[in-house]
Length: 178
Image (cartoon, rainbow, N blue to C red; front, side, top):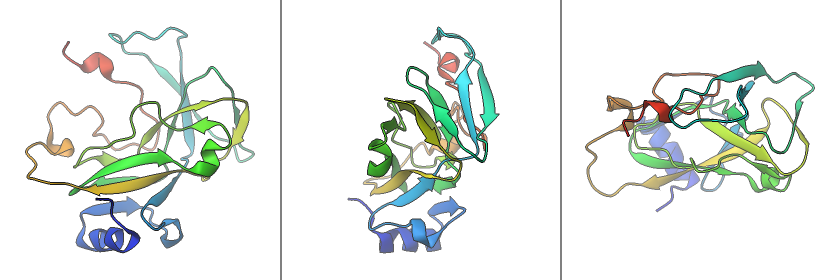
Protein backbone atom coordinates (compact mmCIF):
# COMPACT_ATOMS: atom_id res chain seq x y z
CA UNK A 1 0.00 0.00 0.00
CA UNK A 2 1.28 3.49 -0.91
CA UNK A 3 1.30 6.17 1.79
CA UNK A 4 -0.95 9.20 1.25
CA UNK A 5 0.05 12.79 2.02
CA UNK A 6 -1.50 12.58 5.50
CA UNK A 7 0.28 9.31 6.22
CA UNK A 8 3.62 10.72 5.02
CA UNK A 9 3.17 13.69 7.38
CA UNK A 10 2.36 11.34 10.28
CA UNK A 11 5.48 9.25 9.56
CA UNK A 12 7.59 12.42 9.44
CA UNK A 13 6.13 13.40 12.83
CA UNK A 14 6.98 9.92 14.19
CA UNK A 15 10.51 10.11 12.78
CA UNK A 16 10.23 7.07 10.51
CA UNK A 17 10.58 9.33 7.44
CA UNK A 18 12.98 12.28 7.32
CA UNK A 19 13.24 14.73 4.41
CA UNK A 20 15.73 17.64 4.63
CA UNK A 21 14.97 20.25 3.56
CA UNK A 22 11.24 19.63 3.83
CA UNK A 23 8.87 21.90 1.90
CA UNK A 24 5.14 21.36 2.46
CA UNK A 25 4.48 22.56 -1.12
CA UNK A 26 6.44 19.55 -2.43
CA UNK A 27 4.04 17.09 -0.81
CA UNK A 28 1.64 15.57 -3.34
CA UNK A 29 -1.41 13.40 -2.80
CA UNK A 30 0.72 10.28 -2.39
CA UNK A 31 4.31 11.37 -3.09
CA UNK A 32 6.96 13.94 -2.26
CA UNK A 33 8.72 15.93 -5.00
CA UNK A 34 12.52 15.94 -4.88
CA UNK A 35 14.74 18.46 -6.62
CA UNK A 36 17.97 18.38 -8.59
CA UNK A 37 20.94 19.09 -6.36
CA UNK A 38 23.81 21.42 -7.17
CA UNK A 39 26.17 18.80 -8.64
CA UNK A 40 26.36 16.50 -11.65
CA UNK A 41 29.06 14.04 -12.64
CA UNK A 42 30.21 12.14 -15.69
CA UNK A 43 32.50 9.16 -15.96
CA UNK A 44 36.07 9.90 -17.05
CA UNK A 45 36.42 6.89 -19.32
CA UNK A 46 34.31 6.12 -22.35
CA UNK A 47 34.35 2.40 -21.60
CA UNK A 48 33.26 1.39 -18.11
CA UNK A 49 34.38 -1.84 -16.46
CA UNK A 50 32.07 -3.46 -13.89
CA UNK A 51 35.06 -4.99 -12.06
CA UNK A 52 37.00 -1.73 -11.81
CA UNK A 53 36.54 1.54 -9.96
CA UNK A 54 35.31 3.88 -12.69
CA UNK A 55 36.17 7.42 -11.62
CA UNK A 56 33.92 10.41 -12.17
CA UNK A 57 34.36 14.13 -12.64
CA UNK A 58 31.97 16.14 -10.46
CA UNK A 59 30.94 19.64 -11.51
CA UNK A 60 28.55 22.31 -10.27
CA UNK A 61 25.48 23.29 -12.25
CA UNK A 62 25.83 27.02 -13.05
CA UNK A 63 22.99 29.43 -12.30
CA UNK A 64 22.13 29.62 -16.01
CA UNK A 65 21.70 25.84 -16.04
CA UNK A 66 23.53 23.24 -18.10
CA UNK A 67 22.61 21.51 -21.34
CA UNK A 68 22.57 17.72 -21.06
CA UNK A 69 23.38 15.79 -24.23
CA UNK A 70 22.20 12.39 -25.51
CA UNK A 71 24.64 9.46 -25.37
CA UNK A 72 26.11 10.70 -22.09
CA UNK A 73 25.26 9.25 -18.71
CA UNK A 74 25.04 11.99 -16.10
CA UNK A 75 25.00 11.20 -12.42
CA UNK A 76 22.93 13.71 -10.52
CA UNK A 77 21.90 13.99 -6.90
CA UNK A 78 18.76 15.07 -5.10
CA UNK A 79 18.83 18.27 -3.12
CA UNK A 80 16.96 16.40 -0.39
CA UNK A 81 18.60 14.13 2.13
CA UNK A 82 16.13 11.41 3.17
CA UNK A 83 15.86 8.70 5.78
CA UNK A 84 13.32 5.90 5.61
CA UNK A 85 13.16 3.65 8.69
CA UNK A 86 9.88 1.76 8.28
CA UNK A 87 8.88 1.96 4.60
CA UNK A 88 10.24 1.13 1.16
CA UNK A 89 10.93 4.35 -0.77
CA UNK A 90 10.61 4.40 -4.56
CA UNK A 91 12.00 7.24 -6.65
CA UNK A 92 10.16 7.91 -9.88
CA UNK A 93 10.46 10.64 -12.46
CA UNK A 94 7.90 13.38 -12.71
CA UNK A 95 5.74 13.32 -15.84
CA UNK A 96 6.74 16.90 -16.71
CA UNK A 97 10.42 15.85 -16.58
CA UNK A 98 9.74 12.76 -18.70
CA UNK A 99 7.96 14.93 -21.27
CA UNK A 100 11.25 16.80 -21.69
CA UNK A 101 12.90 13.49 -22.59
CA UNK A 102 14.75 13.17 -19.25
CA UNK A 103 15.07 9.79 -17.55
CA UNK A 104 16.26 10.05 -13.94
CA UNK A 105 17.12 6.43 -13.26
CA UNK A 106 18.08 3.45 -15.33
CA UNK A 107 17.36 0.68 -12.81
CA UNK A 108 17.77 2.06 -9.30
CA UNK A 109 14.35 3.41 -8.40
CA UNK A 110 13.83 1.40 -5.21
CA UNK A 111 15.48 2.19 -1.92
CA UNK A 112 15.79 -0.12 1.05
CA UNK A 113 14.28 0.30 4.48
CA UNK A 114 17.03 2.07 6.39
CA UNK A 115 18.40 4.03 3.41
CA UNK A 116 19.68 7.36 4.74
CA UNK A 117 21.21 9.66 2.16
CA UNK A 118 20.64 11.81 -0.88
CA UNK A 119 19.63 9.89 -4.00
CA UNK A 120 22.07 9.52 -6.87
CA UNK A 121 20.26 9.89 -10.19
CA UNK A 122 21.25 8.10 -13.41
CA UNK A 123 20.22 10.80 -15.87
CA UNK A 124 19.95 10.34 -19.62
CA UNK A 125 18.21 12.48 -22.21
CA UNK A 126 16.72 11.80 -25.65
CA UNK A 127 17.63 15.23 -27.02
CA UNK A 128 19.61 18.21 -25.67
CA UNK A 129 17.83 19.79 -22.72
CA UNK A 130 18.84 22.49 -20.23
CA UNK A 131 18.43 21.62 -16.55
CA UNK A 132 18.79 23.75 -13.42
CA UNK A 133 19.83 23.27 -9.83
CA UNK A 134 16.72 23.14 -7.65
CA UNK A 135 14.28 22.12 -10.40
CA UNK A 136 11.77 19.39 -9.53
CA UNK A 137 13.31 16.17 -10.85
CA UNK A 138 11.43 13.25 -9.30
CA UNK A 139 9.05 12.06 -6.65
CA UNK A 140 9.40 9.72 -3.71
CA UNK A 141 6.63 7.22 -3.09
CA UNK A 142 6.55 5.26 0.16
CA UNK A 143 5.25 1.71 0.44
CA UNK A 144 4.25 -0.08 3.65
CA UNK A 145 6.33 -3.08 4.67
CA UNK A 146 4.85 -6.39 5.75
CA UNK A 147 6.83 -8.43 8.27
CA UNK A 148 9.89 -7.83 10.36
CA UNK A 149 13.20 -6.56 9.01
CA UNK A 150 16.50 -8.28 9.74
CA UNK A 151 18.88 -6.13 7.67
CA UNK A 152 18.25 -2.38 7.65
CA UNK A 153 20.33 -0.80 4.89
CA UNK A 154 22.10 1.69 7.17
CA UNK A 155 23.16 -1.15 9.51
CA UNK A 156 24.60 -3.49 6.85
CA UNK A 157 28.37 -3.87 6.97
CA UNK A 158 28.60 -4.21 3.21
CA UNK A 159 26.30 -1.27 2.33
CA UNK A 160 28.18 0.75 -0.27
CA UNK A 161 26.19 3.98 -0.23
CA UNK A 162 25.94 4.87 3.46
CA UNK A 163 28.29 7.88 3.53
CA UNK A 164 26.24 11.07 3.53
CA UNK A 165 26.95 13.15 0.43
CA UNK A 166 25.77 16.21 -1.47
CA UNK A 167 27.41 15.01 -4.70
CA UNK A 168 26.58 12.09 -7.00
CA UNK A 169 28.25 8.76 -6.20
CA UNK A 170 29.68 6.52 -8.90
CA UNK A 171 28.91 2.83 -9.17
CA UNK A 172 30.49 0.73 -6.44
CA UNK A 173 29.84 -2.53 -8.30
CA UNK A 174 33.58 -3.20 -8.14
CA UNK A 175 33.27 -3.64 -4.36
CA UNK A 176 30.94 -6.64 -4.77
CA UNK A 177 32.45 -10.04 -4.12
CA UNK A 178 31.67 -11.95 -7.33
